[in-house]
Image (cartoon, rainbow, N blue to C red; front, top):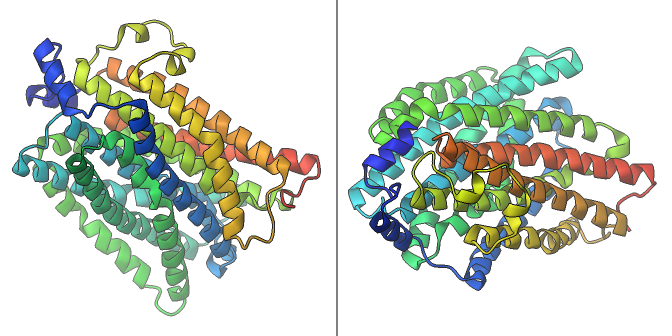
Length: 447
C-alpha cells in the first residue's frame, strides 16, 4: 500500500480524474491486434529458443560428476531458474509500468529509480540464493535421510554465486531492453518480461553447471574457497542496502518486497523435488530435457499478461478500485471473452501455445542431433500439458492481479513471483503426469 501511495503522491496516474487518466493513457503506446501480436511474437520465439537451449544444456550437464554425486542440485534447479520470475520479470514489470506512467522522463529520476532497483535486486539475489540452497538441503535430507557437510557447503556456494552473477547480468540487459523499447515506441509490457527470460534460463543454468563443477573440483584441494566466496557476497549486503534505500520506491520494497519472492521460491522448490524424484525413476527418464521448455514458456506468457493488467490498473484506477466486471465472483470466461485489450492479449497468448510449443518441441529434438523425432503421443501429451498449464495460469493471473490491487498491493511486485512459481510447479507436475501416461501405454517418446 505504501508503494502505491508513493506512486500516487508523486504524480503517477493513479487518480480517477479524467485529465489524469487521459495523460496516463497517452503515455502507453496505442496498440492494434496486429501490432500486439508482432510485439509479443518476437520475444516469445526468442524466449522459447532460450528455454530449448537450456533443456539441451541440462541434458548434457546432468551426466557431469557433480550432478551424479550431488543430486540435490536437481532440487535446487527450479528454484534458481525461477529467480527470473522472482527478480528479473518483477523488475521488468516495475520498469514497464514506470515507463508507461511517465515516471522516467527526467534523466535524474530515471537513473535513481534504475540504480535503486538494481541494488535491491542484488540484495534479494544474495538472500534468495542462500535460502534456496538451504531449502534444497532440507528437502534433500528429508528425501535421502542424510546430507554430507561438503554437499551443504557446495550447494550454498553454487546457489549464491549463480543467482548473484545471473541477476547482475540479466538486470543490466533488462534495463537496456526497457529503455530501448521506450525510444522505439514499443510497449515494454509486451517485450520486457519475455526478453528477461529469453536467455535467462540458459545463462542461469550455464552458471549453475560451471560454478558447481568448479566448487566440486576444489572440495579436496582448496576446501576454503567456497567459504571465501560466500563471505564475499554476504559482505556486500550492507552496500546494496545503502544504495537501494536512496530511492523512495526501492526503499519501501526493501521492507515489503520479501514475502512474494520467498513464498515463490518455496513453491518452485517443491517442483524441484518432483523433478528430482521423477528423473530418478528409470521408467520416466528423459523428462529433464523438457522441463525448462514447458516451465519457461508458461512463465513467459503469463508474465506478459500480468504486466499488462498491472499497467492498466496503475494507469486507470486508484489502489483498491477495480473494473466493474471484476467486483463480483470470479468467472474464467471473462479472462478470454470480451473486446478489451487484456482480453485480446489473453486470447493471443493462449493461441500461441500450440504452434509455439510444437516448434520448440521439434527444435529440441533437432538440437539433440536430429536422429529421432518426437512420437505422436509424446507430441499430443506435451501440447495438452502445456495448454492446460497456460490456460490455468492466465485465469489465475486475472484473478490474482485484480485481487492484489483490490487489497492495495502492487501487482508488479507480488503477482509475477507467485505466477511463475505456480507455472513451474504446475508445468513440472503435468509433465510428470504426461510421461507417466506414456510409460503406461508403452510409448518411448521417440520415433
